[in-house]
Length: 253
Image 1 (cartoon, helix red, strand yellow):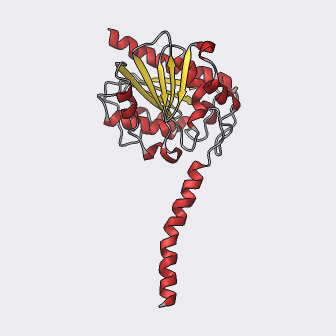
Image 2: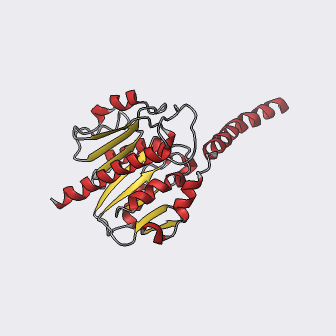
Image 3: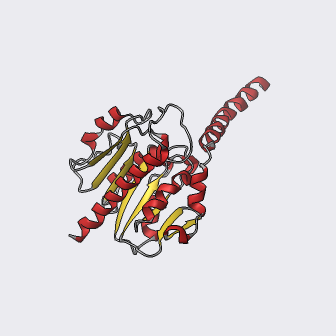
């Protein structure tokens, strides 16, 4: 009987140890690069953007405040602060940007968190949801399940799952990808075209890779980029702002 009890306790401990190991793995994210920390700490006098960091990272333009906002989901096992430079640059163009942290840094544990952001800013009329990598896939899922909330979808090195076909939806989509991406490869991006509307904007960043969509250093499985992180960020930000402008303009017509 003693041996049986020992085996029983061992069987009970296995899932606990596995869950603990998974949590440690998920929480072991690369630290944000110095540029990301500067973007979070810079004064509002720098570019007219007010940053608040509590349960979310909110980048609020203080003067030109347009009626469209962006909810952004981080990539898997990426610290949300790593997207602060891009979020700040987008906000400087007049758009509220909210980066949503995720449980265990994995967006598939809380793909519906955008709904609480929308509810928190009733003064905004239009919303774009977006994300990087896994965050983009979960943003696409949210857009699929909540068509009344979302007017635009922004994909950074990402694409919808097969079960979230948006091809017949009245939604504006921009897909931005790097030609050197080793994780969301150009071939995978091309294969995703049937899952988004025909008027989707496709933005290829020549020489860009997966990790340079954020500020968190290199990523396992990725290819080396042949352009600088700053250059890739400029292209990604410009294409993202263009989508927000399309949503803003569309609703004025």
